[in-house]
Image 1 (cartoon, rainbow, N blue to C red):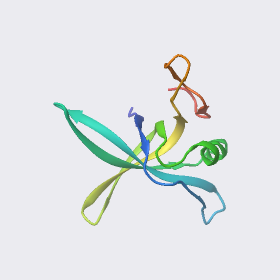
Image 2: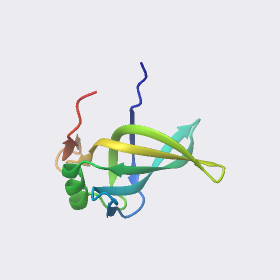
Image 3: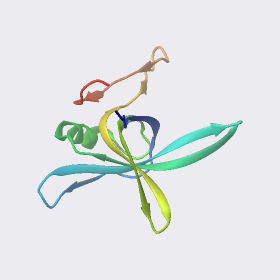
Image 4: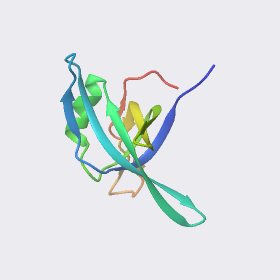
Length: 118
């Protein structure tokens, strides 16, 4: 048995593109930056994300903009193009962590989870 599940936290780096496939299916596409820390040194890698579930696309249109912090869970795909590897995530669910201004604690609204729990 093999499992392909990834959870990443980062910031949206581009405006979200909303498109329709040739077969008429709507989808959303965006890139987001994920920071890594190794021995106090920060590096950033970019991940392309695609959302196919209609409810999530609707919420993405309302809440996802460049610079927003987001947590995504989905299936990882690595593709090679012109000798370089590109990382993609097919998003099963996403979450927007926000700060509560009164308590300075993190809340988790809105959570979009149309996928089965993992």
